[in-house]
Image 1 (cartoon, rainbow, N blue to C red):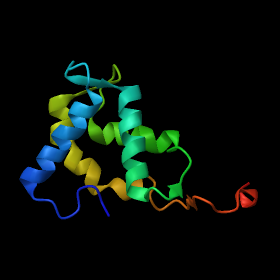
Image 2: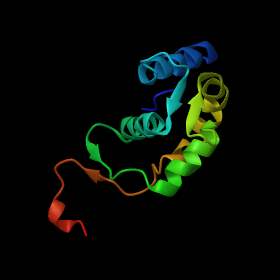
Image 3: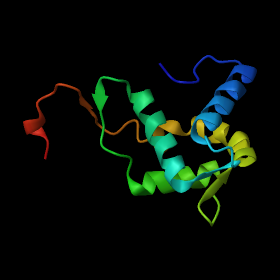
Image 4: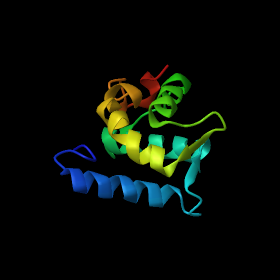
Length: 114
């Protein structure tokens, strides 16, 4: 089930705020690109489900995600930008998070991997 599926606007805002607080643990008001990568990768894994192993997000998909989320030239994502742009990011999540790329269920035969 989707992280934000069926949520009311106020509930989605609370979820976005909760995501921000989890990743901005130092309270700086911005996330580094490494923190954004961690956030995006964890959102991706949550959407794929706990029983699915997926390789890391491609660099091009990560860069597109950064653009949509509003990471600036210095590699920082400010809280107010994140709050404003997360809805657009989430609307494009299937593409940005590469959710339609074949993944492997945990326990599948790994010998079949290239």
